[in-house]
Length: 359
Image 1 (cartoon, rainbow, N blue to C red):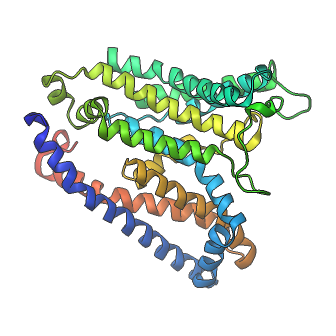
Image 2: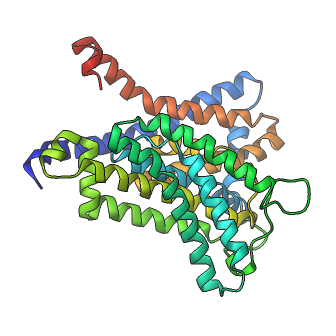
Image 3: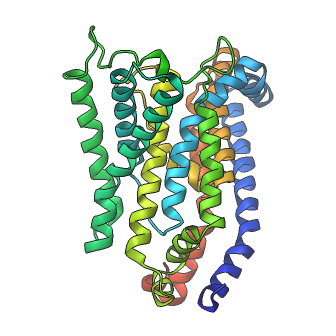
C-alpha cells in the first residue's frame, strides 16, 4: 500500500468494528424505544414484537415476502453506499431506479421474439445502463465544474420520475385508467422462486450485485482508487489517481445498481412498469446505507431488517392493533442512533477548532 494512504487505511480498519457495534446498538435501542411507545399506547410490547417477528419470518410465505420487500432496498442501498465510498452523496437513486424500470419494461415488451436466456439479460442490462447514464449528468457536473451532487441528483430525480410519468400515461400507456405499460413478454419475466409468493429471481441478481460490489471495492485497483478518493481527494491526486475519473466511474456504477433495482421490480414483481411502483426506495436506500455503514454486507442486513419491519408490521397491526406507523418510528430511531455518534464527533470538533475543522 502506498505510504500516503497507509494511515487512512489503518484508521478505517480500526473504525470498522466500532461501526458494526454502533449499528447493532442502534437497532436494539430503537426496538427498546418502540417497546416503550407500544406500552404507553396500552398494548403489550412482547405481543407486538412477536406478531412482528411472526409476520416477517413465521412461515416460508412470510419470509419470502420479507425478501421481496428487501430486494429493491438492497439495490438502492448499494447505490448510495458505492457512491459514498468515493465521497459522493448520490441522492438520485429514485430517478435512476425509475429510468431503469421504464427502460427494462420497453425492452421487455419490444423484444418478445428473443429467447429468455437472451431477453432477460438484455432487459436487465438495458435497465442498468439507463440508470448509469442518468447518473452521468450530475457526475460530470461534479467532476468538471464542482457542482454539488446532492443538488444535481435531487433535480435529476424530479426530471426522471416526471418523464416516466409522461411515458406511462401517454406513449407507453396500456389500456385502462392506470398509468402503466403492457405486460412484458414471458421471455423477459424473472421466474418466481417460491410458489404463491412474489419472491422472484431479482433477489439472486441483488445478491450477485452485492458480491460484485464487494469485489470491485476491495479486490480491484479501481476500488482502491475510488476508496482513496473518498478518504482524501487531495492525497489520492497526489498519489497519481484521477479524481475526476473516479467520480464519474463510481457514480455510473452507482446509477447502474439503482437501474437494476428498477428492472428487478418490473421484470420480477410487477411484470410491467407501473407509475408509483416505488414508495421511495431510492430515498430508503440512504437509510439502508447508513445502517449498513456503507459496506455491501451491511447493506444486505439493513435491507433485510427494513424488509422484515415492513412485512411484519402489517401482521402486527392485525394482531395487536398497533399501527404500522410504529415501523416508520423504529426505522427513524435506528437511523438517529446510528448517526448520533458522528454528530457528537462533529460537535466536539466544532468546539475545538470551529466549523471549518468539523468536517
